[in-house]
Every structure is written in C-alpha cells, then in structure tokens.
View (cartoon, rainbow, N blue to C red):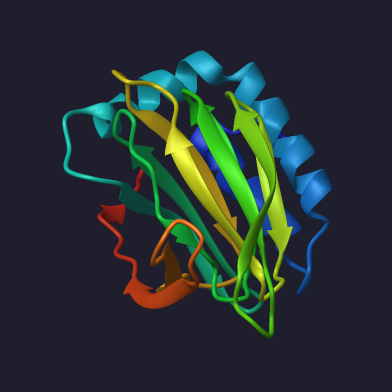
Length: 192
C-alpha cells in the first residue's frame, strides 16, 4: 500500500482495505496499522494535538464508515486517568490501537449462562500496540489511560457501528454483575 500524504489517511485506508471480509485477519491489520503508527508517530501526535485539549470524559471521532461489509473507524481521546466501565462490544469484531500515550486493557470472559465475569488478562499498550477481539458475544473489557496528566489517543476499528452496548457493574465485591445498556456518541467527523 502506498504512503498517503497524512498518516490518518493511511490508517483509514489500511482499515478499510482489511475490512473487506466479514471477519478480517485482525492480526495482519494490527501489524500493518502498527507499522504506520511507529513510522509516523510524531506526525500523528502533531496532527491529532487538537483532540488532546481539556475535555469532559472520553470522546470519539469518526474517521471512516462503510455499510457493506460494515466497518467503523474511530479515533478516541482519553482524558488523564480515565477508565471505562467493564463493557462489551455488542458482538462486533474490533481492533483497538494506541496512537499517543499508553492504555491498560483488562479482558474478561463472561459466562453465557450465569453472566458472571472472570478477568483473564491484562495488557499495556503503547503507541503502535493493539489488541483485538473477534466478535465473541461473551468478550468484555475495561480500558484506562495510564497517564495522570496527558490525554491518550487511540484508533478503533469495528465490524459495524457500536451505537449500543452493555456496561457491567458488580453489585458487591463478590456479588453478581449487572448489565446496563449504554449508548455511545460521536463528537464529530475527523477530516485531514
């Protein structure tokens, strides 16, 4: 794939190219996206600096979308120390990659019968590092910006629009997990 004039264009093109199958090879997509992030880290940080200003909560910007096959590409800005609730992705496949900063991702397995959650892994992602999930209904995770001072920026590629999902709360330290429906919002569309 040829180099585009702006790294966001390149990331968008890679995601859309790999997302032509119903279930893309997420490892290959992550490898190719990661190369661009490593190569163009400075340009990405400069180009996305406007998203790093003071803000209220997590913000999402749409970079690309397509309906057939369904794919959404977003950039998210994570305020310092921001942590998501434990949440699912409505059965969509997805890839999440850090562009600027560092993120912690705690993965959980959800028992399909009892609904209980069991933590089964933790990853730390720096620029160009990614994690992915292949559309399992019972995959859930929680993400946190590791910086106490700086905004982190991430790229998210989903096999459709993640408009509605469930967040999970534990009623008591050893109690059951309650699923609560949530809606996600997009702050705007990114142009480059």
